[in-house]
Length: 461
Image (tube, rainbow, N blue to C red):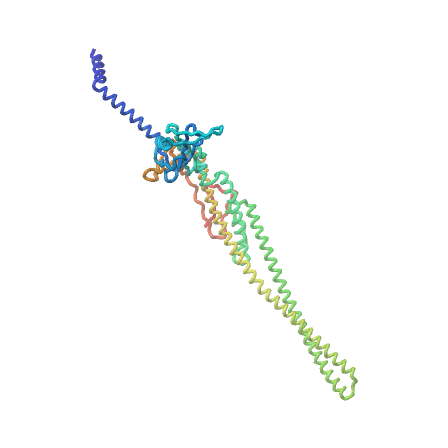
């Protein structure tokens, strides 16, 4: 009985004076919900949208027009109308009012011309194309995409090919790692060659010890490759030294032979001088006897011929002596220049080798750092990291550009620019590579055929 009275009392209270109040607030709540939904669905036409206006029964008047930078559209029979910032129903009413009572002459299929008066209710206006949206960042295909109503950030990412952390940072890390390893090995081989060449040059200059394969064993190269490099430079050194010694021996032998020839020709010249002097004295005696009538003229002629022959022989010997001395001077000059030219060539080659060696060191350092980065990225991909996207929407509002932190399910608006950034977990980075020093080459006795990426060896100071 008490419970029944309570229930009746409660029923009377609700049904009585408070009933009207409840109904009133309920209607207000429904009205607010409807107005909120309408406000959410209402879209204000903006610059860059394309409108399509059509008139029932007059297909010739169907027209597409873009909202220009000044916010106006251009329509036939109307001219320009401001539409930017207005909702579509208001724009349709505005265009309908502008076209109302307009007279349009229409030609029928049989060639007759009829007059059509446009009624405002016959005019329809729709948004044919919305202002495009844009996406950039860690996606496969960033760029401009057409807007579709209620499109979300997740759908836009799908249209753009999905998330892709490798698009800007690098190519496929596995293929890139293989290429970098190949380049890394080639650079080590080139570095070993340049180091062996430098040691060979310094050995020729007398500034270094003999080339030893053990000095290159710290390089991550096969022992056979190092032996081949050192063996090639050693043979080259032997060949150059042999050529140098042969050239020097040839010049020295030429100088000695020239000395002998000069000595012989000098003695010959001396004898020719004595013979000429004797022939001149004999000619003088013959001439004196001929003037006294003691000799006949043929005897004088023979004496003169003998003097001429002696003079000619002396001149030939003198010319031959000058030629030998000139050749001797040339040998002496070449011998003196041989050492200087050899040293100049070696110094020039040493300079070029030093520059090349530094270039290889820098490339090796760069490739080693790239290998570290690819190792880090590969480890991130293996661990499945990189699945936490940060989405920022840049939207033009009434107060200018706004940056909105969004989620994958956030609905976009025409003209939005979406920035995607994948936040991946930083794993333990590999040890930084050692920078190559300026020494002639690495030292040590250990040798490996390959070096793990996590501990890239690039050289020692």
